[in-house]
Structure formats: C-alpha cells, structure tokens
Image (cartoon, rainbow, N blue to C red; front, side, top):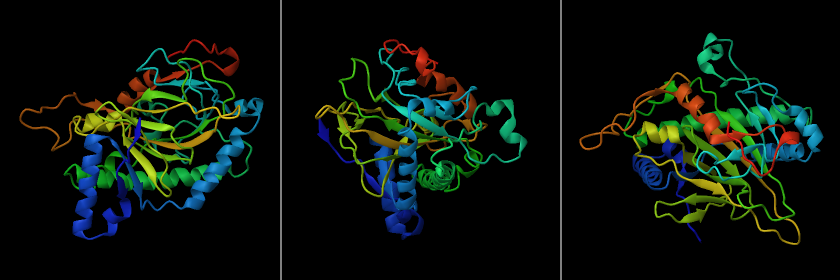
Amino acid sequence: MSTSPIPLIDLAAFSSAGESERARVVAGVREALEQVGFLTITGHGVDQSLIDRVTEASLAFFDRPDAEKTRFCPTKPGSRGYNAMRGRTVGIAQNSGFLRSLQESFAVGRPVVPDDPYFFTKEAGHSFADNIWPDSPANFAGVMTEYYNAMDRVYRAIMRLFAVALDLPEGYFDKTIDKHGSLLRLTHYPSLDSEPLPGEFRSGAHTDGGALTILHIDDTPDALQVKLRSGEWIFVNRIPGAFIINVGDMLMRWSNDKWLSNWHQVVNPPIVNGRSDRRLSLVYFCATNYDTVVECLPNCSGPGNPPRYPPIVSGKYAAERFNLRYGIAEPAAKQDRGQPRAG
C-alpha cells in the first residue's frame, strides 16, 4: 500500500487568473478526471470558520444518547434526518457480502424549496423531501443551511470549470443544475472498542451515483482510499483548506466514460489502547435537475467511439440506483448485525 497525492486544483485561478494559468487549471482537471476521477480543490471561497462550526454542531449531535438521536429518524420514505449506526450498507450493490456499515449519519436536503410546481411533481420523487431538524444543538439548522448554500455555490463553480474541461461553453451545465435536489450527509464513524467482524467496514468499496461529490474530511489519517487504474489502492488524506471532489456514475455516463467514476472506501481504523479514532466526513452529493436528460455530451463521442448509453432522465436514473446502492436497514431495534439488507 502506498500513498500518492490526488491532483490539487485552485478553483479561484480558473475564475480570475490569466489565460495561461486558466489553461493550466483546465488541463489538470482533464488529466485528473480521465485517470483517477478524483481531485482536490482550493480557492473555493468557503471560510474555514464555517466548516469548523458545521463540524462542532455535527459532533455535538452525534454525541447525544442513541435514544435521543433516533427521535430524528425519518418517518416516511425520502425524508431527511438521522440514520443510526449500521443503518445502511454502503457498497452492497457491488458486494452482497458486506455487513452494515460502521457509521451513523444525518441527511440534509435543500433547506428552502421554492413555491413552484416544479418541486412538487410526481417526477420530483423524494428530491425535495422535508428536512428533519434536531432540537439540539441550537444552531444545527442554521449552520447546516449556511453550509448547504455554500456547497451549492461551489457546485455551480465546479460545473462551469468542468464544462470548459469538456470543451463545452462555460455555462453549458447552468440550466441543468439550477433546480437541483442535492444532499448533504454528515457521516460519523464512531470509535470502536473491538475488532470489526469480517465484512464490516466503515464504508465498503463503491462508486457514487450522482454527478459529483464534494467531500470534506477531518485529520484522521489513512482512512479514505481510492483505487487507481493499476488496481492499487492509495490513501487520500486531508489537505488543510481543500475539498476532495470525485466524479459520480451519472457524470461518467454523461461523458461517455471519458471521465472516471472511481472506486473508493473508508477502511477500518487500528485499535490502539482499546479504542480507535473516530472520524467525521461532510459529504455533499451533487444532483442535477430531475428532468435533465443525460445523454452523451458533445465532444465525448466520435468515429470508433459511439455513445455507449441511451439517453435517460436524471430523476429516473437516480431513483433506479438509490436503493440498489444503499441497503437501508430496519430501525436499530430490529437489526440483525449479520445479515445485510438491500433497499
């Protein structure tokens, strides 16, 4: 096992630098997303103090007793809120032998849904389901709303960069993401006091299903791994002030497999002096508008490289893949630790 850096891209340089620097940024993005599907970005404009407040509020919630946290579990399909330890199985679509994941999480959707029929049609599915806000910490809803909106701005900026990297007009994706239903998932990997069972992982090997993911990780070393085309797994550790970006399956399909939606996992930590370190990740899963038609992008096919996938509507694509990718378990009291469930 070796450690190898994922390319570092300055998002601000794309927006404000001269033509030669801008071209260098675009070339770096192309190479990264064709070869490994991951990059890290700085210059994103998100203040560290906001990230610190989100981290503090997240940990304050996860440190509450289980009986209190489960009061904020969803009560109807698609609702946001708390998902208990071993409440889902990340990677079960790729490996049915995975046991339920050694994580708990809290999901936050679009904080304010406009009073527009677009957001309430049957086709919208659960994209704009109600949020569930805990009663403590007191600033939870406010700080998560602020962070969600910051991620929305970063998402839009990244997609403008990606458009240029795909030889498209800079605003090509603007109208495909202006009414999106992206999801923020606060993911907590609690400390462990015993070795996991075979098949138990913090996050099993998987690819993400959406357009792209914006990830903030903490300082816990050697946890997130990415698989290279060579088959080697490398660790991706935190760079202060940077987010990790990875392509999802939808964007890979959109680009006719030009860009790689790559395998990644969160490995189990070593147990030292009877305990392991805990870990917190802030994961923003970027979705497109549910009525976006995902079909081979211009410049991504040609002689000898025809479109590999038929067109599909984004919302239908997402709905088909959601339950396949994340096994949703029964409430904690009904879980059988040894048997994962799909959907």
